[in-house]
Amino acid sequence: MGQKIAVIDYGMGNLRSVSKAVEHVAGDAEVRVTDDVAWIANADRVVFPGQGAARDCMAAIGQHHVRQAILDAARHKPFLGICMGLQVLMTRSQENGGTDLLDLFPGQVVRFAADMPGDNGLHLKIPHMCWSCVDPVAEHPLWDGIAPGSRFYYVHSYHVVPEDQSLVAATTDYGVRFNCAIARDNLFAVQFHPEKSADAGLQLLKNFVNWQP
Amino acid sequence: MGLAKRIIPCLDVDNGRVVKGVKFVEIRDAGDPVEVARRYNEEGADEITFLDITASSDDRETIVHVVEQVASEVFIPLTVGGGIHKVEDVRHMLLAGADKVAINTAAVFNPEFVKEAADRFGSQCIVVAIDAKRVDHHWEIFTHGGRKPTGIDAIEWARKMADYGAGEILLTSMDRDGTKVGFDNELTRAVAEAVPIPVIASGGVGNLQHLVDGVQQGGADAVLAASIFHFAEYSVGEAKRFMANQGVEVRL
Image (cartoon, rainbow over all chains, first blue to last red; front, side, top):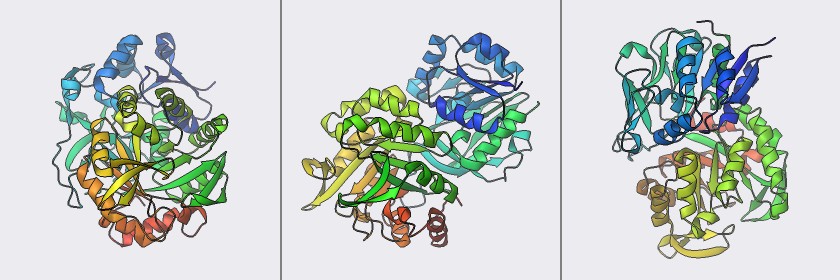
């Protein structure tokens, strides 16, 4: 019997893309897009995706009653946050005039500055919407088989600044060098979209599916 | 610093088949969209755009099935345009596996729709498609595949759409579309300077240097082309290697 992988469904973002990509690399695992807290509690591992604005994400987490399930999974089982699924783990975001987040890790979510110079005489565009190089800061099983500097697909306007710098697992340069991945024990969370990052992204998802923290 | 420009092959899909017209006539069949998308992915496309040009709304479900199939095996961003008129259309496409939708005519007739869609699903998935044509000394928006003038200035419109929550502009020069003489780089530059969001240049690519020019002269964040890839004149991989050799940063 294969393992159970929950993709937490709180109505934010393209969950089908995430579940299809996980299924693609997960062999005989049962992958379920769900807000059923019992199923999430029984799952072997949990993927926490998300897109959209911080305020809407927090509201949706409340409406789907998955806040505690997310926090429990993040503390106790292999857990992969993606995009907003990374940001909402912090304390507070600048988005929507200031939004309180899950506060699993003390830290802020800040917007890219509007006037960063680009490489073509124009200001850097926001959102950061392109394939950018991910530079791991230390070895981690989720980087297995992925060359340092590999490009992953991004679409976001905000990035995380955790108080504890030792959480940072990788950085990317977009006008500023920002934190694009964090890792702690059983938890890994990324700003980019592995489910949309072709081979490099599928490799990372495969590493997650096989990860035994 | 690694600011890769995106290469986006575009598939015009009519009733489940890839087609490409020249100035919206002379449609040539270019294959099965799922197969074509698979090939582009293998060649290293950064994103794929589907424009549904199916005339009858009865046949619109066809594109949904195409997107579903592609999204199950191609793991790069997918954009779908054509026939997106209401919030429910956006939802339908996102659920089928699209990452972004391109809104064109509906935005012109109902700009609030862009705001509503961006509020509901996030700016990251709302692309506003602008079809612009040179009229006297400015560019004007046209709708209905370039047939109907609107009197709206393209630059002003792009600014307004960015304010309304568009995450990206897909900018097509109707003067150049299908001509193979290159993008209208002046138009691209003018829009890229006017808006804080990414701009995709489209319309007129006939060779690989045109893609480079779109980035270097036009200031585009991404370049979109259809026919040069469909008929295997060039592969996406060749295009990216050529651009890299010309000093454009791309994902190889």
